[in-house]
Image (tube, rainbow, N blue to C red; front, side, top):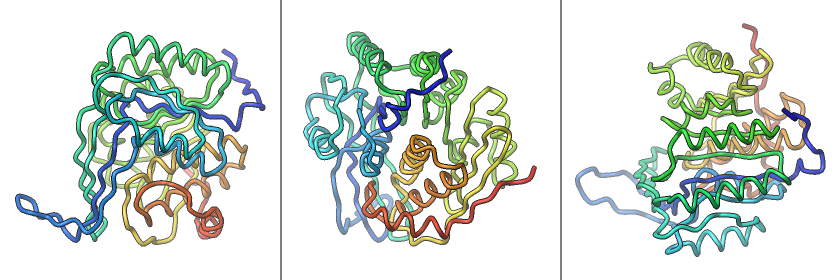
Length: 321
C-alpha cells in the first residue's frame, strides 16, 4: 500500500456527504412538548455533516471538492452554497427531494433534533458515485466521510468505500455513528472522531468519566486506526496517536448552539494535518475552532483572528498513562 502523500495535493480535500440535509433551524426560549412553541428566528440552509466540514475547510483556505447524493427536486440551496465556497460539485443527483432536518435550539443551549430519512439511492447512482470516487482518488489524498447513510446504502457498502480509499494510500477521516460507525471501523480509517455518546453506543455501555472514554478508545486502537479523537463537549478533546494521549480543553464558552461543533472539529483536524502542524498546536487549533462554533448559529469561520486568540487560551498537554 502506498502511504506516501503527494505534497502537491495536501491543500486539496474531498468531503463525502452520503445523506445531506436542508437544516431548518429555529431559536426559541423553550420547547413546549405537546403544545405550541413560538420560534424567535429561523433559517433554512444546506447542511449535512460533510457539507458543514466543507464549509469550514473552505473558510480556512482549502481547495474543496464535495460529493455524495443529492435529490434533484430541492438542490438549489446546495448549488448556491457550493458556488459561494468555490467548491467543485461532484454530487450524484438522484430523483426526489433531499431530506429536511429540524433543529430547535432552546435559550439554555439544548438542541432538539428531528432527523428525517434521506433519499433513496439506486444501483445506477451507486455506480456513478464509485466512478467519481475512482477519479477523485487520482488527484486527492484527503477524504472526509461524514454523516449518516441514506436509504439504499448499507453500512457494509460504506465500509467498502473507506477500505478502498485506505488501500490506495488515502487519508480517510470518518465521522459517523451507529451501524455505519461500527462497520466502518473494521475498514481502519485513518482518523475517527466519535463523541462520548457515540463511543458509549459502540462499546455498549454508558461512559461517564474521562478514564472510561480513554479505555474504550484504546480498544479501537487495537483495530489499527491511526488517530482516535474523542470529543467531550465542554470537557475538551482527547487524541490518541502512536500510543500517546493528548488532551486539549477550552475555556468556558457562551453556548448559542452546539450544532456543527463536531463537524467544525473534524475540519480543524483535517486542516491541521494538511498544514503539517505540530501535534499539540494542531489539537489546540482544532479545539479552538470547535469551541468558537458553539457561539454561533450555523457553521463557518467568521474570523481567523478569533481562532488564533482563543487558541492561546486552550490548555493542551500530553497525558501520562
